[in-house]
Image (tube, rainbow, N blue to C red):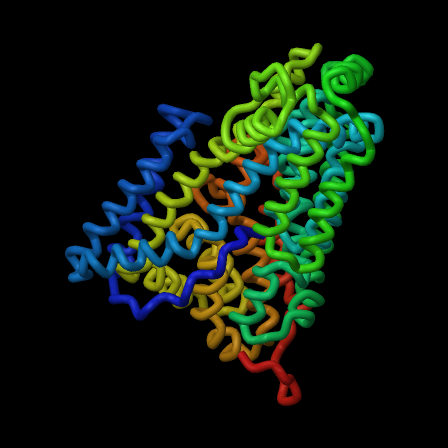
Length: 494
């Protein structure tokens, strides 16, 4: 899943709004974002204009709050708590930028691409990407780490093979979020059953009922796409392989660094610590394996401590580009370091402003309450949960809130319907966890788009697992397939 920050504290009691008043900021935000993206900026909207639109949306919410007697200080305090909750995510973004820089100049990413090109071909590439990212994400419990490690390399391989990057990012995220949902190491996988009132492994077993069919359908779709993929007839990668090997010292020893980072995270090391160690090991590998590149970046004539330090620090913090014999690789072998993550951080902060004010004025709780009252049937209860999770991913811009708020709101409703709490925890993950990456201004959408270098609008149509999951959970609910009911002997308490 997910960002790796500590889940935000549960919101304080909110003031009651009418549903119309609560939806005013939502409609205003959607209209402004639609005009900004569809009419004016397109893919360039994330360069700054969308960030300001989120602030304008927050201003609209603040005006609604003002007319409902919500103090300005209350709104600012909630914004501050929301921004504080993303501190871990922001630090991870900075470390990912640093890691990308050292892994580029050390030859780690070029080496992964070099060997990947020899193993993968366009026909099996997309399906293999789903499987690879699923395994890595199950092992690490983190879709974020999966994108920052193998995800970056897979985008590079796809670029070299001529496979559309939107397709590739969709395959990466499909696999990454499958593992993120199913791994007991994932924070959202632990958070959802905690909110619903069931235990972790009951939740995982019950979630597999909808998740496994969804990932199978996803892989089949990517196999069909691969069989019909047109890569302009260029599957001869010898020129690209030669360009990589003449620009970098390629060695399988470089795989030690990413393997060690994944091992650390599997061992439950903090992602920040694991990424820092990966960055430092990448810097050491750059000096050992690519001294000429370090020297070139530093602009010095002799490699010594000062020039090595400067070359490494430049790769970590600012734009770095490695020239090769192939023009197609020049854009690929470029990194913006920590500076390249600042736009995404800017987006996250602005999204938290909007989400914080919406929470402070009681709009999020009011929207969830309206959804809870909208349906009376069992299917309606599942549907209202799904819609609530989607709405919170859009309005609160944070997947934790999309799990915590509906989890709190619907737990009693599921119990009143005689449904076991794992029904709720599964639905929270099927609709809250996986759809967060489909929202450009959500912390997850902003993160993965920034790390992979692929706009959300480019991969959203290919993230099959992510948008099929809510439909799968609704399908099972509609036909009452594996909908577990409470019984007198049921040990779970909703």
